[in-house]
Length: 474
Image 1 (cartoon, helix red, strand yellow):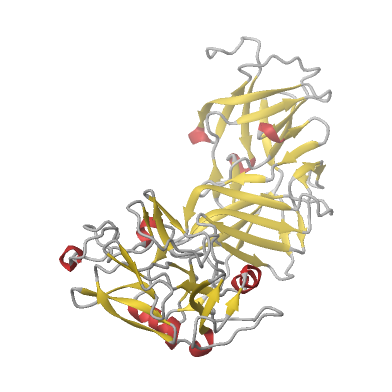
Image 2: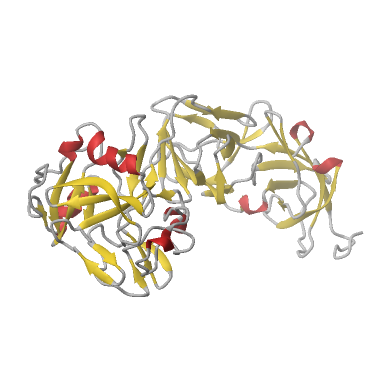
């Protein structure tokens, strides 16, 4: 008799098929203290029973009702695990969201019937397993959308061999299930993601992988039929097929090649800013501060530990001699600064580079437009490649919204900072963007935007210029 358990309370002992809580392709998932089952009878009298005594290395458990007192009409007991999948009117409820656990399945639904206190559980569903690998990616959630009902209310059915099962509904209502990965799962090395599903044949199976930094990878089985069987697990691993993630919510969704090996990046939605000690991206690509303030920065000197990412008004180059610290470290989530050679490749080295850059005025701000590798001009819009004046291409706010949605990047000619003095803003030689590449001290390399072109060259490190970060696309 455990403290808190009335002497008259029932105690159930639970096991599962093949002697473990869940036995699937060699996976033996064990009971945990606090696991809850729902016990009910034909009249739907019911009570929650919690695990309190684990034996046989956790494959066997005893359950008791600690805080409930229920009178059952008979000793013909029906039991569901987990307890919160019980529905007194419809039978079983599967949740819209499942919880990730490493090498495990949380809340895998099971059913048992008994006339005594011994429960031999029956697995009700099958399991779909994804095996994912992608260096630098942390998975936040995985959603699956099908042509079947995969969550909500279900009716228990019995198979010809006497087992119980949940069959996927034919309706497309409640046809999306999501695996919540909590704080995120790093897939730099291969990881398994297990999602339990009702039994059935799925003709549509679309997979959406969300990262912790807001990027998305969408995959589809492309018409292939997927069959989920009770008490079995089917694994999807597509060797050699890359997981390609879209831009995060802080990026422009157009991919730019940065070298001849095919590496691509997404540009941030705006220039880097530090306002009152908080790092952020400008709200729009064409935004910049235009003035000096000790608490508002978007023109940075060369970034070192000594200069706090270049937020100093010192004009002595000796103060900037330390090793470079990437501004991307301040933002995280894979953001980083392009190198000298990468900026050069984007602006001049990639295929048709000359056709994908131009001087422009966007919402009244002068600067340079860069177009992504794959580009389709929005209907009704014009784009004139090349340079000549800031009025070479002029877009109002609505026109620019169409260009940006198609992946266009705009680098405003925000000028430079010399101490506390702002210079060259909007002038013919008005745009400067740091690279991550040092030059012979006291210089470092920048991308310079001119009204008649652009080039990468060295400037003194104390000179404060703009920063536009990128995020790897593949």
